[in-house]
Amino acid sequence: KAGVTQTPRYLIKTRGQQVTLSCSPISGHRSVSWYQQTPGQGLQFLFEYFSETQRNKGNFPGRFSGRQFSNSRSEMNVSTLELGDSALYLCASSPTSGGDYNEQFFGPGTRLTVL
Amino acid sequence: DQQVKQNSPSLSVQEGRISILNCDYTNSMFDYFLWYKKYPAEGPTFLISISSIKDKNEDGRFTVFLNKSAKHLSLHIVPSQPGDSAVYFCAASASGGTSYGKLTFGQGTILTVHP
Image 1: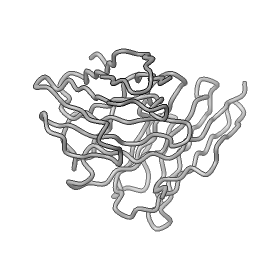
Image 2 (image 1 turned 90 degrees about the vertical axis):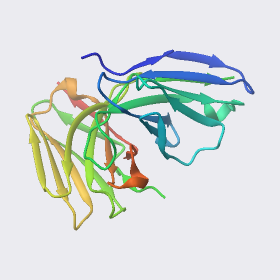
Image 3 (image 1 turned 180 degrees about the vertical axis):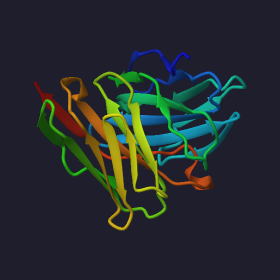
Image 4 (image 1 turned 135 degrees about the vertical axis):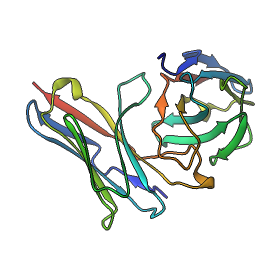
């Protein structure tokens, strides 16, 4: 089975712009979670989608949003970029819904640099 | 408030010896724990997990121990190999609706295995 894929791998934007990141989960996985990794804050949960519905959201401003499509692919969007948004954005997929004990499998990440 | 803590930023071990990585948590709602390994510029790779109903889980060279009363878990790698050199993250999750798809990560421990 192919793993989780994320595009693009690297992105450079300027302050005030917006960006869209894409994630394709492992085939058959319906839950997709997004995380932000920075040197100062570590790995922080952004949100989770299952069957096109956001079921959980972390403590991030409304500039961070996402969606999931019927084929379980997911996108996240960051509007009005700030310097502090520079980070590695990781997507992870899981085979079933929350409440079950399931591992999450991560993609390689998208490295976003905001200038 | 950091709910999952890895108090050792780094660990250095000789090849063939045991590596012991430690993790403490504060949230008593956590009932599932995972260890991930991460190389630079890659996403975390799942290693091993344990449910709160167990106190030990073993997979090859990797064993995870859980002490619920102390809110402590550890990962043992025996024997350690140079290829194990990476950053190791402890993560925890809670079952239930408000925790869907959310892993809470520690800050990571850099393991270096010397030949």
